[in-house]
Length: 95
Figure 1: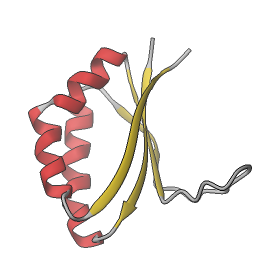
Figure 2: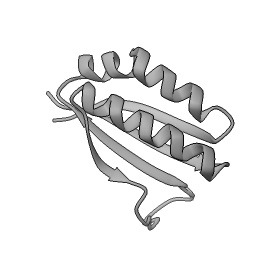
Figure 3: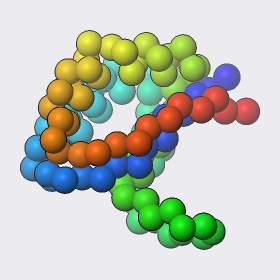
């Protein structure tokens, strides 16, 4: 069953964030993930959520999500992101 990572990201330092994006993309590819949404325009349809930069990634399974998220490659990307963005991130299984 596919699993997804959903991110609401507030970029606070766009220049530094570019380094994170490059490193994260390499880790996503290595762990068989793919981007479905990466920062497009958002439109609130209901509620009071004010999203920032939305990212949605798809992985083959919840186990693949966990391997990716804990991987040395992604953890190194997170070090690059420190101070450049605030993120809310969840993983969810698909149907």
